[in-house]
Length: 245
Ligand SMILES: [Zn+2]
Ligand SMILES: [Zn+2]
Image (cartoon, rainbow, N blue to C red):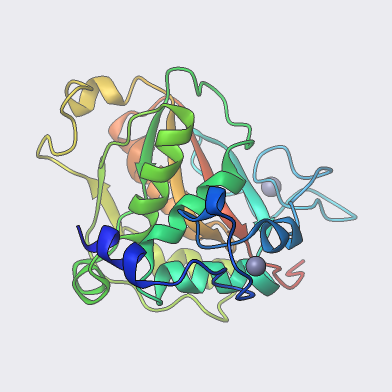
């Protein structure tokens, strides 16, 4: 309802460049030109975490990931308009932009998608209350519609973690340690049976941004410990991180 009203009140112009949107695109928030400016993350990359590989030695980013967490992929680099789009999703009160972001993620390649379930990375209670929605859940639902895959809220966040800005990969891991656990109620499981059977399906974590992968690794750890067989992750943006090696 709120989204329908928002759509009527907002002029049909691109959120990023203010160009008028064509009638065909009027349900979107970002125009074609701006979407094409987003820089896709491309191979060569670490086959596991999808980060450009270091010149020497093994990838440090995914070395400590739990065994079940096999692959993470991101659609675009988080700069320019892509950063503005994520900002609108997270802080601009514009969850509708999830549709635009999900459109950029449709081509991401993760294993077992034909039988997989999408699992949004949950927000802490305080943040959920302030924002009114979980941006990762909105993204997962938009992507689930494109992929024809169900979304299941398998995880809960046990505490609100400090903002992750300017932390090294190790500090980020410590910051989110133990932040997630399996939801014990059978919420969001309407057609997918019990959480136990969901764990036998390929699980795809969905989040807005991949920075060092610490949050996703911790969410995957909770699924791994609960007995998940295959966990992968997709995000819209990938932070252009400094070289920690
Ligand atoms: Zn535009
Ligand atoms: Zn890696």
